Every structure is written in structure tokens, then in C-alpha cells.
Length: 216
Image (cartoon, rainbow, N blue to C red; front, side, top):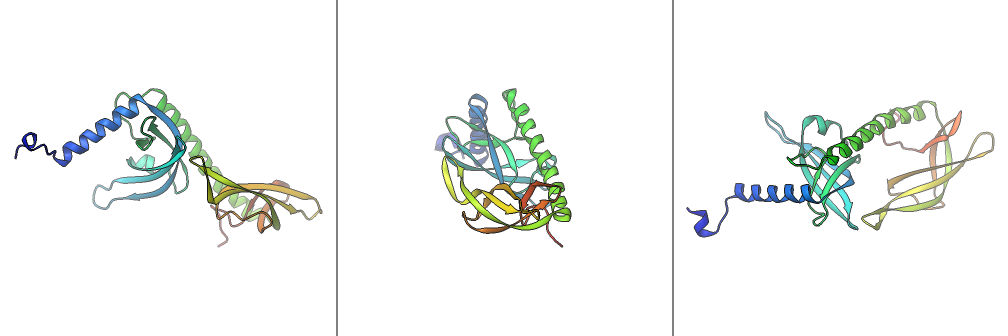
């Protein structure tokens, strides 16, 4: 069948055209945003493909995207972790994560993405170590949430997510303070929560349970 005569395009041709348009827009109108990993998975078989799903805010709205990554890049990520995303200014719904490269990419994009990824990787490494120390050396104390701030995504407040500020009493009778978030189902002001703090430095504290450390 002659596709030119019928006006129909084979799937491979359509996909190639979309990829070319995406590459062109991202090359000409690239902007960088910080996204969040929402899903990680890989295909089955002898040659598995590694995929990531992410969300990001651009032009006052929230968007979602999926992309295939190299195994090395995929292993650096985890659910909820930040991920650099570049998108087209005129079409914010068109995006690629940090490792989806194409010829002619603006020189600043890989540098900015590499820096953001390195920072995210460092934080991902330090957070579990810090939280394990809180769990093994810290003291538990009841705390009162003094303020709750709604997290903002795409210019709008997210109802179930927020940052909290809290106060708790030390064994000496002094009052210490802390903050945490953004977190899902953030408690309202006036709620009582449990925090862990280091006895030698009460400024190092966090609400329990901890994201990266649990009692066995």
C-alpha cells in the first residue's frame, strides 16, 4: 500500500516525527525545572529497559512525563527524589529528564542537569546516615505542631502536602523547635506528634517515623 497516496503514516514514521518535533522544541526553547520521581520500573526479558515517571511544575501548572533511562542513571533515583527536567517553553507538556540527550543540545543543559543530579545523589546518601543516627542515638519527645504551610505545586496549594513547624520540651525544661516537609498528610496546627532529637544538639531533630530509617 502506498502511504503517500492514502495519506496514512506507518506508526514508526509517526513516532519518528514526534521525536523530531520534541527534539527541535527542546533544543530551541529549553528551560530547566526540578521534577519529582513518581515511579520507577523496568521491562522484562534478556535486555530490560529502565523507565522513570515524573512530575514537574511549569508555567503555573503541573505536568507529568515518562522516559527511558540508562541503567546507571536509573539506579541513582528513588521514589520521591528530585530529578532535573527540561521542557519546551511554548509547550511545557513536552519534556525530557536529565539523561535524555539529543544532538545540538544547549551546552548549559547537561552541566545544569549534572550538577542537580550530583546534589540530589549527595542528599540521598546523607539523609539515611543522618536518620539512622537519630534513630540509634536520639531521644523521643512529644511535640506540638505550631504552624502548617501548604505545599505549592504549579502555583496552587496541595491539600494533602505541607511543611510543618513544631516545638518540644527537652529534659532540661528548655523548648526546642524544628520543621519538616513537604510531607504527605501533614498534621494541622495544634496536633501532637513524636520527634527524635540528638541530646547533644537538639537542633538536629525530625518527626518520627523517619523516611529512611525504621525500628526493626
